[in-house]
Length: 329
Image (tube, rainbow, N blue to C red; front, side, top):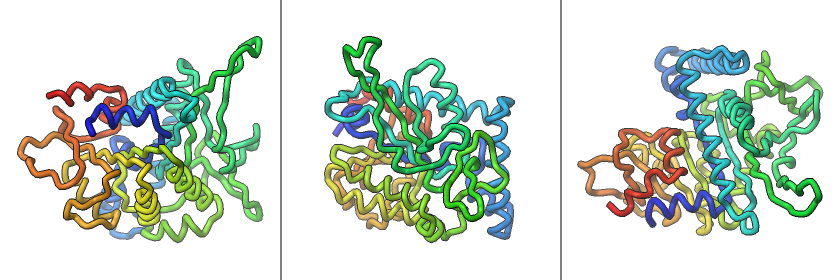
């Protein structure tokens, strides 16, 4: 399969994207950086969460630092490209709907939604119902929205993007004695999140709201004609790795992993609990940076000429078709 053929899958199939912390790392350092700085895991976790809160408050105040501005611009390009690809899809064959699953707590995607929706017509679905009190309900993700025209003379499905945050968000709030999750428009003092303690699986499955979103994730991957793009995520979260590995057993699912560095493919294979002998399933592919000295690729790998690293910006270029012409070189 060529790069162009892989790209076309993002238009012709049910689009799912798994976004990890690597996509926000220019503004929010990765957990590993906090672990190096602080000896105590609890202290490292608390400082990471405070950093996420700080950056998210910047995003709501519209007073951005240079790093936040740069990161937000990339997320905006990402959302625009998703909408453009959905507009090219055939709604008679697959819904014009994309699912973004992210383990990030920050507001970058939400802020990008706000900015892009000023010039692009699409539906934003964060799973909430209500007006003043917006309550999270995972069943709200299974929706499509259509425009019927002023005289009801035609029906056209409007592109929609669902945002699913299976590890919570810094604007999720919960009250004692109330199982509901309230989605606020600002950072809350005690957000409902799954902390990166190494026991994320236990925390995620022990709470109904997290479990229901993880179940939605697996259900979407099990649907026929689905594709999963993975960016900024190396599957260190074991519960998500197990879910994706189980889903890969479905030969109709195509998984495309965008690797920041060449050796990240090995890391992903290891975290998915496959052997590193090259005998990986035929429906998982790896997009890696160009390495002119690498003549022995072990997996289904595609090098992108002219790239030193694969980032969210690279994914946007891939989805736009910028690398298609390299197929003939």
